[in-house]
Image (cartoon, rainbow over all chains, first blue to last red; front, side):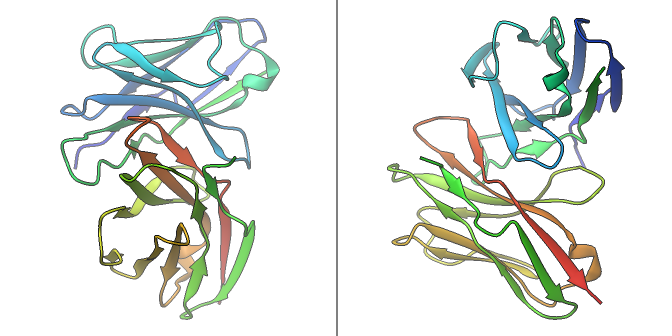
Length: 115
Length: 115
């Protein structure tokens, strides 16, 4: 069964360092997303991406964040200068609106710990 | 206003009993989709069930059913014959057609199944 894959599963970094989280969405999906979940809290939308550009972003997704689809398969989230409050589980997801349900398929998440 | 409201932070159910997890939503769109996801302690997000706003029948998937009351804007998840493996966080989510591809998530309900 096709799945969304994310790497790394866990990353520990020092405050101020740059972090890149990688995702391989399901191959025939057209819509890509990043969500984050601070431990024990709700799932928060960060950004959506369609047709090689950002289609929507939340207030959380400030200038420290960027996304890229560099090679047609990977979808990356970069945090330029990490802060303590960036510690969270980051989920990549993809969706195919061609099917009636169009549900989000999530990856297993990348846990980011900022020290 | 919150797009998705889940008012039960925690629920307990006896094994083999049925349980209802509440979800209300807020939208002015005529076309939208409602989703439930399960998040076990391992952290991954598992799609459970979908209800389209134009679907007249309540959605069912195995032991999961969605009690869709459109006029009340509620989309409660019913789990029948609870099993120990059902213990997890459950998130209700909505996708509106006018916001295109953003999914809104509730704060989640933690379900514990008691043997």
